[in-house]
Structure formats: C-alpha cells, structure tokens
Image: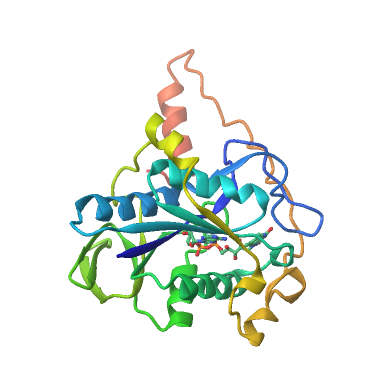
Length: 264
Ligand SMILES: Cc1cc2nc3c(=O)[nH]c(=O)nc-3n(C[C@H](O)[C@H](O)[C@H](O)COP(=O)(O)OP(=O)(O)OC[C@H]3O[C@@H](n4cnc5c(N)ncnc54)[C@H](O)[C@@H]3O)c2cc1C
C-alpha cells in the first residue's frame, strides 16, 4: 500500500512573521516548520503502516521553496519512508486552485492508494486543498476526520459536529484530511532522526509533472485568481480597564462594567 501525506512548510507562528512587497507571505524572513496540523496527517499514515501486515510506503509531498525541504525532513524523522519536494521558482504566489493542480499532478504521478492531508495549513487556513485535489483527480474525499481507519480498500473517518458525529466511508483511492483530534503526533526519536538522513527525497520541477496547459497557465502570482491588495499589521492590543477596590465600591463597579458590555 502506498500513502501520500501532504506536508506544508509554514512560517513559525512564534516568530517574526510578515509579508513581502508583492503581498505574499515572506517565507525567507526566518525559519519555518512543518505545519503543525500536517503532523497529524503524517501520524495517521504511520499508524496505518504500524498496524498493517502488508508493507506500507509513506511518501511526504511538499510544494514550496528551498526551505520547504525541512517539512519533508520532519516527516521522514517521524517515520515516513520517502519524500518529494516540488520546488520551482514559477510557483511563487500561486493561489489555492493552482496549488491544488500542482499537488494533484504530483499525486497522479505517485499513484498512491490514499492521500492524507491536514485539516488546514496554519498560515493560509483555507482548508480547501483536499476537496480541490479530489475534484481534479476524480477521487472521493472525506474531510476533517477526527478518526481515520483503513480496511480492505475502504477509508473510514468520523466527523464530529456540534450536535452529531457522522461516519463517512470512501473507496480507495481517495483523499482524506484529519483534524488535531485524530491522535497525538509522535515526536521523532534519535533513531528516527539518524534514519531520516538516508531516506530518499526526490526534487521535482513543474516540467516533471504532467500538468495540463490550462492548469499550467494559472501558476504563479501574476496568474492568481485573487490578489492581496494591501496588508497592515494588526494594531497592538489596548490595556484593559482596571477596577481597584479601595472603598468597597469595586464589586458594584465590576457588575456595572459587565452589564454595560452585556456580559451578564
Ligand atoms: C511556494 C508557494 C508560495 C506561496 N506563497 C503564497 C503567499 O505568499 N501568499 C499567499 O496568499 N499564498 C501563497 N501561496 C498559495 C497558498 O499557500 C496556497 O493557496 C496554499 O497552499 C493553499 O492554501 P492553504 O495552505 O490554506 O490550504 P489548506 O487547504 O488550508 O491546506 C490543507 C492541507 O493541504 C496541504 N497543503 C496545502 N498547501 C500545501 C503545499 N504547498 N504543499 C503540500 N501540502 C499542502 C496540507 O496538508 C494542508 O494541511 C503559495 C503557494 C506556494 C506553493
């Protein structure tokens, strides 16, 4: 069985993040990392491999600039068997439809039984790529799985809603996305870190993919269907109001404040 996990390299949310002059995310500003939500996708693939009697190959695929190789490295350290890094300057600033066309072409080339993605990237947070890729491949999609299991050519997820949970079953080949409820992602062991150095990582450019002409024409910032017109930093938070109880009026002042804000 072959499983592809989609792993996105994103800016570190704890670091200094910002935008380049062309309105795109500044991916060179400082070190990024594997999108945390994609670690759950890698974990689910590894658990299927751990529980299976047959050999399961787990290939981590990323689309991004040079540094995005770190996202694959992390997946390999966790236990993935190999990686594919699609790295092509012309991809800079591509929007979600173009990104999905490129990733779908990569999946078509790898011909896996199952694709597992995170529920959303932690930078774009659109959560649309799994559905877009499924549409392009003509494969069923089951998204936002809080659980995932695979058995005899079928993938089953449980989706937890506000008032009910649904169990959704899809025939393989299929694409699924999993949430952070799907199970704690393993931390790479020293053995895993050392083993990762010997695992194969292929570098592909767009020419290595069988991208149809219509999709190829949508790649890159100039061809994106949506344009970022302006970015501005969020204003710093203002200090909250402090109520000091010096003469016994504090409780009433607090209650007045809560009523005025319709908190009670
Ligand atoms: C090199 C590059 C630079 C870009 N620069 C910008 C930019 O500066 N500004 C901007 O607005 N948009 C940019 N984009 C486009 C934007 O990142 C894509 O639209 C994005 O990949 C899709 O949105 P999302 O990550 O929110 O997808 P979601 O649908 O939220 O992601 C769901 C899942 O899809 C998978 N996935 C998503 N993207 C990738 C990927 N690239 N590789 C592997 N798996 C992935 C992950 O598993 C992820 O958890 C860029 C894209 C690329 C490839």
